[in-house]
Image 1 (cartoon, rainbow, N blue to C red):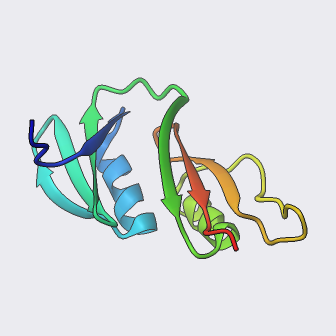
Image 2 (image 1 turned 120 degrees about the vertical axis):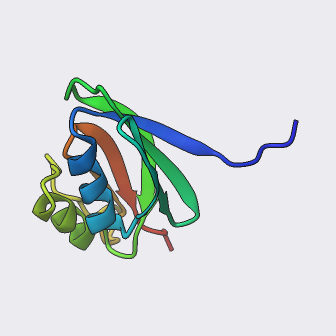
Length: 115
């Protein structure tokens, strides 16, 4: 089987709000949209946001590698998301991980490349 593309689907109670979050925070580009689903390209990946979500906290496994997780976490919050715990330094290095949620309560991680 030849895979044509890999995409990850998340659920949203408000797909427009979720799409706005990912375009604002991560620079995603809308590549397809209809009343049921919005597909976004970000960093070579594809995220599909499907309507009908219930707004419940859901672990997604989505991880976004960024240069600075502290700044990234602040941007998540500024765009309406949540990061319940501030990123913490570890082993004398700057923070490398932030656990956050998008506007629809989909849990996401921010990481930085470790030295």
